[in-house]
Image 1 (cartoon, rainbow, N blue to C red):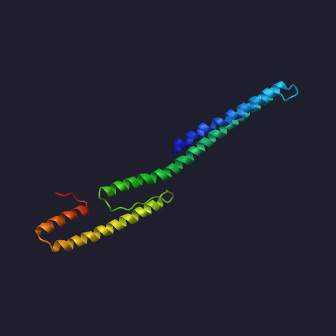
Image 2 (spheres, rainbow, N blue to C red; image 1 turned 60 degrees about the vertical axis):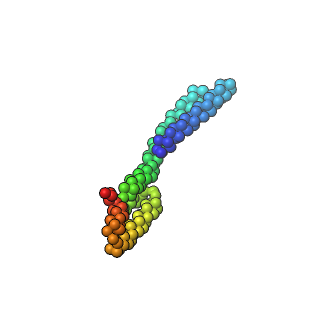
Image 3 (spheres, helix red, strand yellow; image 1 turned 120 degrees about the vertical axis):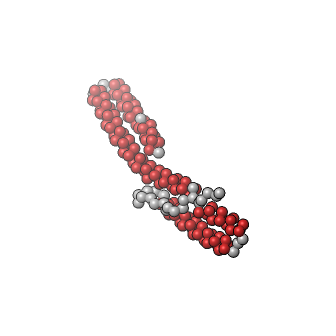
Length: 160
């Protein structure tokens, strides 16, 4: 993201000096045709000074843009990466951890919803497990074997 933003800044920053250069070129041609106009050397030196100043300002602006965009990208990409890792853990059956983001990170509302979703999943799994345990106590051996398999799936263990 930072490179994308900065590439646009660099591309657009070449336009302004070009406009100023062409504007001064127009003035120089105009002054050349008027013998009573200001000195050409002074006008050419002004053009050079302004272009150098613009170059310095654009370099400073580019550096600031890069720093701000890196900072913002870090505050956005970091939580997204963390969220991706946590989704992978849930996919693999690990429901034990909550998602915690830094104070200044974006997507805190997404993390909060994620944690609420996990809490609901944990409650439903616990309730289902207790129902299966009760059903297992009232089952025959084949039913107990099948209910044990269901408990293993809920616990995230591999089936035999």
